[in-house]
Image (tube, rainbow, N blue to C red; front, top):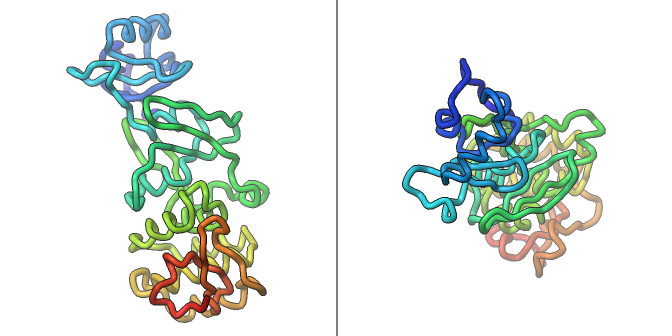
Amino acid sequence: MTCIRAESQVTTQSFLSRYPVFNLEMAREHLPGDARQRIQHAVEAGRAITLRRGVYATVPEGVPAQQYSPDRYLVLAASYPDAMLAGHAALELLGLAHSEWNSCSAYSTQRRLKFRVRSVEYSTVVPPAKLVHAGRQELGVLTSTRGNLNIRHLGIERCIVDGFDRPRLFGGVVELVKSLDGARLLDLNLLNQLLDVYESRTLFGAVGWFLERNQRALFVSDGILGSLEPRRPASPHYLDRKSGNAVLSKRWNVLVPRELAGGEGDES
Protein backbone atom coordinates (compact mmCIF):
# COMPACT_ATOMS: atom_id res chain seq x y z
CA MET A 1 0.00 0.00 0.00
CA THR A 2 1.28 3.47 -0.88
CA CYS A 3 -0.36 6.82 -0.45
CA ILE A 4 -0.73 9.23 -3.34
CA ARG A 5 1.40 12.21 -2.45
CA ALA A 6 -0.06 15.68 -2.15
CA GLU A 7 1.85 18.53 -3.76
CA SER A 8 2.45 20.46 -0.54
CA GLN A 9 2.07 20.21 3.20
CA VAL A 10 -1.52 20.11 4.38
CA THR A 11 -3.51 21.00 7.46
CA THR A 12 -4.93 18.33 9.71
CA GLN A 13 -8.41 18.88 8.31
CA SER A 14 -7.34 18.71 4.68
CA PHE A 15 -5.30 15.57 5.44
CA LEU A 16 -8.34 13.93 7.04
CA SER A 17 -10.48 14.92 4.09
CA ARG A 18 -8.01 13.34 1.69
CA TYR A 19 -7.47 10.02 3.47
CA PRO A 20 -10.51 8.09 4.80
CA VAL A 21 -8.14 5.54 6.39
CA PHE A 22 -4.49 6.14 7.21
CA ASN A 23 -1.64 5.10 9.45
CA LEU A 24 0.68 7.15 11.61
CA GLU A 25 3.53 6.97 9.09
CA MET A 26 1.30 8.63 6.47
CA ALA A 27 0.35 11.35 8.93
CA ARG A 28 4.00 12.02 9.73
CA GLU A 29 4.81 12.21 6.04
CA HIS A 30 2.22 14.89 5.34
CA LEU A 31 1.61 16.82 8.57
CA PRO A 32 4.11 19.32 10.01
CA GLY A 33 5.07 19.19 13.66
CA ASP A 34 3.87 16.46 16.00
CA ALA A 35 1.65 14.36 13.74
CA ARG A 36 0.65 11.97 16.54
CA GLN A 37 -0.59 14.84 18.67
CA ARG A 38 -2.51 16.34 15.75
CA ILE A 39 -4.27 13.04 15.09
CA GLN A 40 -4.98 12.55 18.78
CA HIS A 41 -6.68 15.95 18.89
CA ALA A 42 -8.78 14.93 15.89
CA VAL A 43 -9.77 11.70 17.67
CA GLU A 44 -10.76 13.62 20.80
CA ALA A 45 -12.84 15.98 18.65
CA GLY A 46 -14.66 13.08 16.98
CA ARG A 47 -13.20 13.81 13.54
CA ALA A 48 -11.20 10.57 13.52
CA ILE A 49 -11.27 7.20 15.25
CA THR A 50 -8.51 4.82 16.28
CA LEU A 51 -8.96 1.45 14.59
CA ARG A 52 -5.91 -0.28 16.06
CA ARG A 53 -2.48 0.86 17.15
CA GLY A 54 -1.20 3.36 14.61
CA VAL A 55 -4.17 3.03 12.23
CA TYR A 56 -7.01 5.55 12.03
CA ALA A 57 -10.10 6.45 10.02
CA THR A 58 -11.60 9.83 9.23
CA VAL A 59 -15.20 10.15 10.39
CA PRO A 60 -17.50 11.64 7.74
CA GLU A 61 -19.24 14.84 8.77
CA GLY A 62 -22.55 14.21 10.53
CA VAL A 63 -21.78 10.56 11.36
CA PRO A 64 -21.36 9.62 15.07
CA ALA A 65 -17.80 8.36 15.57
CA GLN A 66 -18.90 5.29 17.53
CA GLN A 67 -21.18 4.17 14.69
CA TYR A 68 -18.81 4.65 11.77
CA SER A 69 -17.51 1.55 9.95
CA PRO A 70 -14.54 2.34 7.67
CA ASP A 71 -13.76 0.77 4.30
CA ARG A 72 -12.49 -2.73 5.12
CA TYR A 73 -9.98 -2.87 2.26
CA LEU A 74 -8.37 0.40 3.30
CA VAL A 75 -8.13 -0.79 6.90
CA LEU A 76 -6.11 -3.86 5.94
CA ALA A 77 -3.95 -1.96 3.46
CA ALA A 78 -3.12 0.72 6.03
CA SER A 79 -2.34 -1.91 8.66
CA TYR A 80 0.20 -3.81 6.52
CA PRO A 81 2.33 -1.81 4.07
CA ASP A 82 3.09 -4.94 2.02
CA ALA A 83 -0.52 -6.15 2.01
CA MET A 84 -1.75 -7.86 -1.14
CA LEU A 85 -5.50 -8.26 -0.78
CA ALA A 86 -6.36 -11.89 -1.46
CA GLY A 87 -9.02 -14.52 -0.92
CA HIS A 88 -12.64 -13.47 -0.76
CA ALA A 89 -11.60 -9.83 -0.34
CA ALA A 90 -10.00 -9.92 -3.79
CA LEU A 91 -13.17 -11.38 -5.30
CA GLU A 92 -15.17 -8.56 -3.70
CA LEU A 93 -12.79 -5.89 -4.98
CA LEU A 94 -13.14 -7.30 -8.50
CA GLY A 95 -16.92 -7.13 -8.19
CA LEU A 96 -17.23 -10.90 -8.56
CA ALA A 97 -18.04 -12.16 -5.06
CA HIS A 98 -21.15 -14.35 -4.96
CA SER A 99 -21.85 -13.24 -1.39
CA GLU A 100 -20.58 -10.63 1.05
CA TRP A 101 -18.40 -11.64 3.98
CA ASN A 102 -17.59 -9.88 7.24
CA SER A 103 -13.93 -10.72 6.81
CA CYS A 104 -10.97 -9.38 4.89
CA SER A 105 -7.67 -11.13 4.20
CA ALA A 106 -4.37 -10.37 2.52
CA TYR A 107 -0.99 -11.87 1.79
CA SER A 108 1.77 -10.35 3.91
CA THR A 109 5.27 -11.30 5.00
CA GLN A 110 4.75 -9.55 8.35
CA ARG A 111 3.66 -11.25 11.54
CA ARG A 112 0.34 -13.00 10.99
CA LEU A 113 -2.23 -11.63 13.40
CA LYS A 114 -6.02 -11.54 13.35
CA PHE A 115 -7.81 -8.44 14.55
CA ARG A 116 -11.35 -7.11 14.47
CA VAL A 117 -12.68 -3.63 13.69
CA ARG A 118 -16.40 -3.20 14.22
CA SER A 119 -17.96 -6.39 12.78
CA VAL A 120 -15.16 -7.23 10.33
CA GLU A 121 -12.40 -9.73 11.06
CA TYR A 122 -9.03 -9.08 9.42
CA SER A 123 -6.24 -11.57 8.85
CA THR A 124 -3.05 -12.09 6.87
CA VAL A 125 -1.49 -15.25 5.46
CA VAL A 126 1.86 -15.94 3.83
CA PRO A 127 1.97 -15.64 0.01
CA PRO A 128 2.02 -18.90 -2.02
CA ALA A 129 5.42 -20.51 -1.48
CA LYS A 130 5.95 -21.59 -5.08
CA LEU A 131 5.44 -18.06 -6.39
CA VAL A 132 7.72 -16.63 -3.71
CA HIS A 133 10.51 -19.15 -4.39
CA ALA A 134 10.28 -18.42 -8.12
CA GLY A 135 10.32 -14.65 -7.49
CA ARG A 136 6.94 -14.37 -9.19
CA GLN A 137 4.71 -13.31 -6.29
CA GLU A 138 3.69 -10.16 -8.21
CA LEU A 139 2.46 -12.19 -11.21
CA GLY A 140 -1.22 -11.47 -11.76
CA VAL A 141 -1.37 -8.73 -9.09
CA LEU A 142 -3.24 -5.50 -9.85
CA THR A 143 -3.04 -2.04 -8.29
CA SER A 144 -6.22 -0.04 -7.76
CA THR A 145 -6.72 3.45 -6.34
CA ARG A 146 -9.15 3.61 -3.45
CA GLY A 147 -9.48 6.37 -0.88
CA ASN A 148 -6.33 8.03 -2.29
CA LEU A 149 -4.33 4.89 -1.54
CA ASN A 150 -2.79 2.52 -4.06
CA ILE A 151 -3.94 -0.96 -3.08
CA ARG A 152 -2.47 -4.19 -4.47
CA HIS A 153 -4.83 -7.11 -4.93
CA LEU A 154 -5.16 -10.35 -6.85
CA GLY A 155 -6.52 -10.17 -10.38
CA ILE A 156 -8.99 -12.67 -11.81
CA GLU A 157 -6.30 -15.06 -13.03
CA ARG A 158 -4.62 -15.18 -9.61
CA CYS A 159 -8.02 -15.68 -7.95
CA ILE A 160 -8.62 -18.71 -10.17
CA VAL A 161 -5.27 -20.40 -9.53
CA ASP A 162 -4.76 -19.31 -5.90
CA GLY A 163 -8.42 -20.06 -5.24
CA PHE A 164 -8.20 -23.70 -6.30
CA ASP A 165 -4.92 -23.97 -4.40
CA ARG A 166 -6.32 -22.40 -1.19
CA PRO A 167 -10.12 -22.72 -1.45
CA ARG A 168 -10.79 -21.98 2.24
CA LEU A 169 -9.30 -18.50 1.87
CA PHE A 170 -11.84 -17.79 -0.87
CA GLY A 171 -14.84 -19.17 0.98
CA GLY A 172 -14.60 -22.73 -0.33
CA VAL A 173 -14.75 -24.10 -3.86
CA VAL A 174 -18.51 -23.55 -4.26
CA GLU A 175 -18.27 -19.86 -3.35
CA LEU A 176 -15.11 -19.49 -5.45
CA VAL A 177 -16.59 -21.01 -8.59
CA LYS A 178 -19.96 -19.26 -8.29
CA SER A 179 -18.06 -15.99 -7.95
CA LEU A 180 -15.69 -16.64 -10.86
CA ASP A 181 -18.58 -17.76 -13.08
CA GLY A 182 -19.33 -14.04 -13.38
CA ALA A 183 -15.97 -13.27 -15.04
CA ARG A 184 -16.10 -12.27 -18.71
CA LEU A 185 -12.51 -11.24 -19.44
CA LEU A 186 -9.54 -13.50 -18.87
CA ASP A 187 -5.86 -13.40 -19.82
CA LEU A 188 -5.31 -17.03 -20.78
CA ASN A 189 -1.59 -16.49 -21.33
CA LEU A 190 -1.21 -15.17 -17.78
CA LEU A 191 -3.25 -18.09 -16.49
CA ASN A 192 -0.87 -20.51 -18.19
CA GLN A 193 2.15 -18.69 -16.72
CA LEU A 194 0.70 -19.09 -13.23
CA LEU A 195 0.00 -22.77 -13.75
CA ASP A 196 3.55 -23.31 -14.98
CA VAL A 197 4.97 -21.74 -11.81
CA TYR A 198 2.69 -23.76 -9.53
CA GLU A 199 3.49 -27.03 -11.36
CA SER A 200 0.50 -28.80 -9.83
CA ARG A 201 -1.42 -31.42 -11.78
CA THR A 202 -4.40 -30.89 -9.49
CA LEU A 203 -4.45 -27.20 -10.45
CA PHE A 204 -4.22 -28.04 -14.15
CA GLY A 205 -7.23 -30.30 -13.71
CA ALA A 206 -9.18 -27.76 -11.67
CA VAL A 207 -8.49 -24.86 -14.04
CA GLY A 208 -9.22 -27.04 -17.08
CA TRP A 209 -12.55 -28.04 -15.56
CA PHE A 210 -13.39 -24.41 -14.76
CA LEU A 211 -12.48 -23.18 -18.25
CA GLU A 212 -14.57 -25.89 -19.85
CA ARG A 213 -17.47 -24.95 -17.57
CA ASN A 214 -17.20 -21.33 -18.80
CA GLN A 215 -15.88 -22.03 -22.29
CA ARG A 216 -18.35 -19.84 -24.17
CA ALA A 217 -18.41 -16.94 -21.71
CA LEU A 218 -14.60 -16.75 -21.57
CA PHE A 219 -13.99 -17.52 -25.27
CA VAL A 220 -11.83 -20.54 -24.50
CA SER A 221 -10.87 -22.53 -27.56
CA ASP A 222 -10.87 -26.32 -27.77
CA GLY A 223 -7.13 -26.05 -28.40
CA ILE A 224 -6.51 -24.42 -25.03
CA LEU A 225 -8.50 -27.09 -23.23
CA GLY A 226 -6.63 -29.74 -25.18
CA SER A 227 -3.28 -28.30 -24.08
CA LEU A 228 -4.28 -28.50 -20.41
CA GLU A 229 -5.76 -31.99 -20.50
CA PRO A 230 -2.48 -33.98 -20.63
CA ARG A 231 -1.31 -32.19 -17.46
CA ARG A 232 -4.34 -33.13 -15.34
CA PRO A 233 -3.85 -35.42 -12.31
CA ALA A 234 -3.28 -39.11 -13.03
CA SER A 235 -5.82 -40.16 -10.38
CA PRO A 236 -8.97 -38.40 -9.11
CA HIS A 237 -8.37 -35.44 -6.80
CA TYR A 238 -10.91 -33.50 -4.76
CA LEU A 239 -11.28 -29.80 -5.49
CA ASP A 240 -12.34 -29.40 -1.86
CA ARG A 241 -12.62 -32.33 0.55
CA LYS A 242 -14.70 -30.25 2.95
CA SER A 243 -17.47 -29.42 0.48
CA GLY A 244 -19.48 -32.64 0.90
CA ASN A 245 -20.59 -35.05 -1.83
CA ALA A 246 -18.63 -34.85 -5.05
CA VAL A 247 -18.89 -36.21 -8.57
CA LEU A 248 -16.06 -37.09 -10.90
CA SER A 249 -15.25 -35.00 -13.94
CA LYS A 250 -13.69 -37.80 -15.97
CA ARG A 251 -11.99 -35.53 -18.49
CA TRP A 252 -10.13 -33.59 -15.79
CA ASN A 253 -9.87 -36.26 -13.08
CA VAL A 254 -11.15 -33.91 -10.40
CA LEU A 255 -13.95 -34.55 -7.92
CA VAL A 256 -16.32 -31.61 -8.07
CA PRO A 257 -18.84 -30.63 -5.37
CA ARG A 258 -22.20 -31.95 -6.53
CA GLU A 259 -23.66 -28.45 -6.33
CA LEU A 260 -21.35 -27.39 -9.18
CA ALA A 261 -21.55 -30.47 -11.34
CA GLY A 262 -25.00 -30.11 -12.92
CA GLY A 263 -25.16 -30.17 -16.69
CA GLU A 264 -21.60 -31.32 -17.08
CA GLY A 265 -22.25 -35.00 -17.66
CA ASP A 266 -19.99 -35.83 -14.75
CA GLU A 267 -20.12 -39.28 -13.24
CA SER A 268 -20.51 -39.97 -9.56
